[in-house]
Length: 140
Image 1: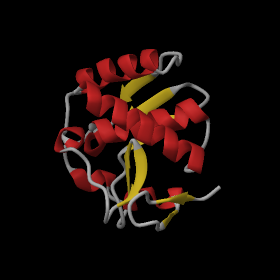
Image 2 (image 1 turned 90 degrees about the horizontal axis):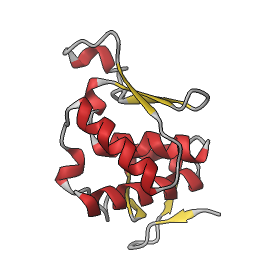
Image 3 (image 1 turned 180 degrees about the horizontal axis):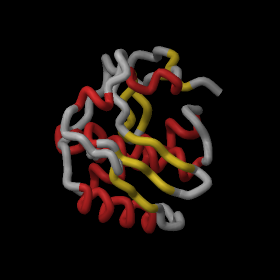
Image 4 (image 1 turned 90 degrees about the vertical axis):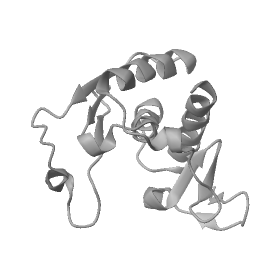
């Protein structure tokens, strides 16, 4: 079942997630925007706390968050020429590796949606990400 922007009706492709806004529903970037508080870079310990709260609220087993072991403050380390590598989810280990550019609540919700759905960038994943983001925003 395809996703459509609730405002303009554009067909949305979850694999092009960088062009989408996940907040209650899935929006195209022209119709939706994030609350700035969701995009703010946060301390790792705060993200760990949010992960625990989100897992508990959504009836999920706890997940582990890990810092990039080769952390370098130079953002070029995380740039592949087209985008920044923000985080990686290990479904088998229920682990999220957060890289410094991804120390944001939007990134945490994105990766938790992968773990909660056991799916890549699918419609189910997108809707889950939107639900997680809306919950976090409500509890900020």
